[in-house]
Length: 259
Ligand code: MG
Image (tube, rainbow, N blue to C red; front, side, top):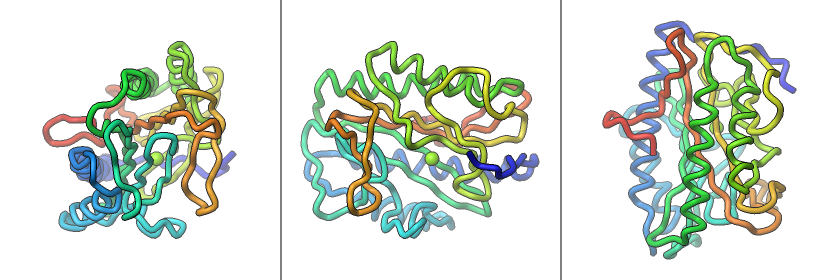
């Protein structure tokens, strides 16, 4: 449990987070449009890096803890932190989770989504849809006066009602001048615990959902995180500002797209 203080963003800082968030969402959308059979995850990563830098920003993940990509690109049973590679060639039926961060004028945006590669199975489509909807269930609880675990509980309840499981070892987080700030935002647990949400907080809510068991393991490269049982996994994330008027997503494109 982090003892770090939760930062509250001033109105000026909230505006900066909106700009960083919009750019991050545009980068996610660009990456998502590139998902098709025959493309390598390195090609997508190169496009993300060029796009972010061409807008005067820096990819948040590049060199973070030694990570070599600008996006995390995680295919099928890879849950998160897939390392972009020339050797990973997407094929018809894959599901591809892309997590992107951009650092612009002192603040980060952080968002992710899982994209179908060509035609995917009905089971894979349902996993993606349930994962996205579990985020929105959590989002409804990201309101001033509620507690962090009200979000956690809403995500878990929705996912488990649909027969899937939520990852325990990795969680959402505060976000702002640093990519990972307090508080931690788990995707599981009983409601009514953790920090009380208040205007000016910014959090990344990011359900990581497995079709089978929730247990994951990190491969020997130190990053790639897979489901232990080899089941498909999906990921969906947005950066949320808590305002006096309710939750506001910063990671939305100019066209209003959240994927
Ligand atoms: Mg995140």
